[in-house]
Image (cartoon, rainbow, N blue to C red; front, side, top):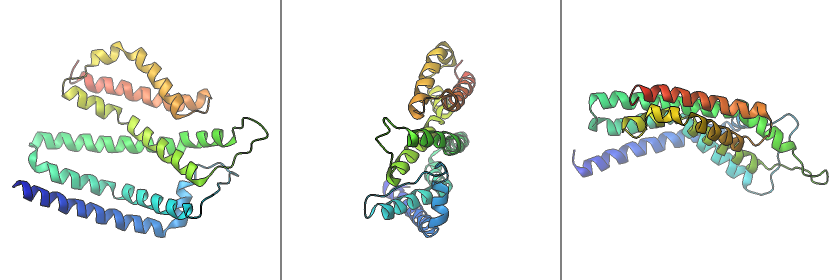
Length: 230
């Protein structure tokens, strides 16, 4: 294929992805009650969210529907991306790419699920009830709730990509298992600090819920890297 044919192919696949995402987003927009029942599930019983801007609820509805649509069609998006680059890969490279993308996708979903079911409910319960003084009452806005949920989900999803990133670094010869074992203690400190940043609740239980899975991913990463660069 010529350069312009590659561009035409890319444009065609991008249009397919865009149409699929828009259709899924419109469908999610129409199921408002079900959509926000899922989004607001981690909210503690009795906590009321407020809205202080005229257009904010409608804009949040559109934004949540868009992200939900992208999540729904994300396997199709990954397929279109792979289908575009696959012709330029050798058979071995295609198999490795499929495995890496599939594992990375599942790990990202696992990180998001851990945040949604465990970490964020603890965080919103702690921060929503935290007061510097009895004279100051909390009034949590819907936009603030959505922002924290989105950022924490994204962070946990990216953190759970650790094994895939270590595998890629080992493949290009940058990372060795001996290096990871040598700096295991340093990694534990970084993991605990990262866990404290992600979940500023202050209790050891929630900190352990974040830190232990990340540390286990570090150990799994060592075993993966060891097979490539001991």
